[in-house]
Image 1 (cartoon, helix red, strand yellow):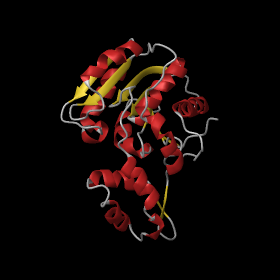
Image 2 (cartoon, one colour):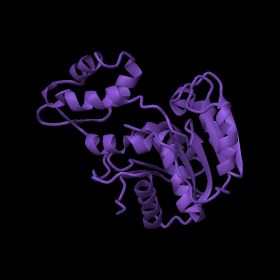
Image 3 (cartoon, rainbow, N blue to C red):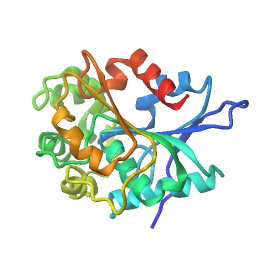
Image 4 (cartoon, helix red, strand yellow):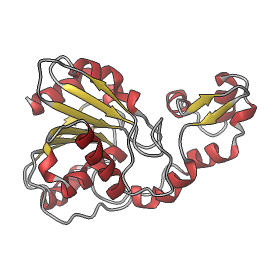
Length: 257
């Protein structure tokens, strides 16, 4: 059953075009705030918290089909019949399933640094951290950061993960539904299954320093997406929108222009 997603609208009173943006695993709508704000100079932009993330409902069910249904419901509720869509990582796989199920609701789509293939598990330590650390015992975010640093040395990644903390009267709680997301994880990193050839204009964006999309993946992607382009962002890893925001903005506006 579809749920009502928490979302933020960056309005443009002149434009009739809409861009929906979807975050990756452990992310939330404000991951794209800077770019969404800039894109709103020309478009109406909607960023969402996907189910079990951010302020969106926690549900026991989680699948790419269910997440696509959530987006379809959101578009209906906003009276948007057709839009541009951008998805990063998990959000990129979600919009692949969305365009397969609802092609009539997609003008163009941009998939950021993810392919429809299977990946090896790489987030186990983060799930373990969310399950084993007692966030309710931490008095400050600094305390939580110190505890998390034993499991993750990269400060940038720790800060990203710690955005999932809610301040409570005593300590912190988690915004994410860890158990459901972990149950979904094998599907999340698995092969995306398609019912149709995707004819909507599609752009796959990938970082030169990331191994999520390789040039050896192009031929397989072309068997699914009949109208597809590829764009490499030099000097970027997986978090292209955060690492190369100026380049990302230009790529989006050029493709959706």
